[in-house]
Every structure is written in structure tokens, then in C-alpha cells.
Length: 183
Image (cartoon, rainbow, N blue to C red; front, side, top):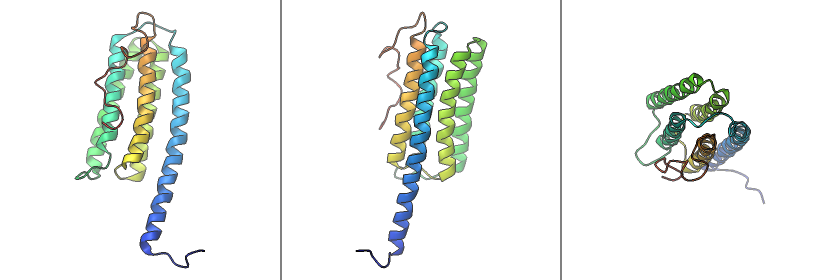
């Protein structure tokens, strides 16, 4: 039996549910494409070039900063959305990506540069989502973004490690000091 009238609160709750459903559909689709793209690029990179410790450190630092960025804009008691903080943190991430890209370009390694560009695209997708919603992420949304980011960065780190002269894939390749989901 259908309810003849909905209260204002019920209408708002329905609108929020619709907004979250749209958010998840958009992020899941966008992040699935990103992961597939990263996987293809990184598979090609694995056999090309030599391991470069500075490139590895750059990717690890980008991972840590990106995950911290997501945590920074996740709902917590006492935290509120602040556009100035968002702009400042976004700019800092852009500077870090420019540093990593510059190093990669100096090595004349198009595949490594492409890998960092894919990581940058992942960050910009997350940044764009926050700009569009103009609010803090709820914990579920945060977990979705963190999960994708961890996968993409771990693939990039392992791909760097399987280059000639690298330590190989596995735990030795992925720094343990980077925050993972839920931390």
C-alpha cells in the first residue's frame, strides 16, 4: 500500500539517498575505468626501463598525500567543509604531481610519465567530486575513494619495482608507512 503523503523529512531523506546512489554510480564507473587504464599502462611499463629509487619515493609520497587528502575531507566530529583549506590542499597535491612528472620527464621515460599522469587523473577525479558536492565525504564515500586510490598507487609502486634493477613486487616494494583504508 502506498503512503498518500510524505513528511518533509522523508522527502529530504529520499533526496539524500538518491544523491548518494548517483555518487556511487558515478565514482564506481569512473574508478573502474581508472583502474583498468592503470592496469594496462602499468603492465606495459613493467618490462621497460630501469628501476629508479627517486621515482619510487615520489609515487609513495603521492600515495601518502592523496590518502591524507581524502582523510582530510572525510566527515568527523568537529570538522566542517572549508573551501580555503580544500584549495590549499589541492594546490599542494598539484605541486607534488608536478615534481614527480618533472623528474619522470628528465628520465625521458614516457611510460613512467604516463603512469604518474594516471595517478594524477585519479586525484583530479576525487578532487572534482569534492568540488561538485561542496561538502565533506561521508565515511562510506571516503572508503570507496580510499580503496580505489590504494589499488592504483600500489599497482604503480609494484610496476616501478619490477623494472630491471628493482626489488621486485611484494611487500618490500610498498612502503608500510602509507595510510591505508580506515586509518
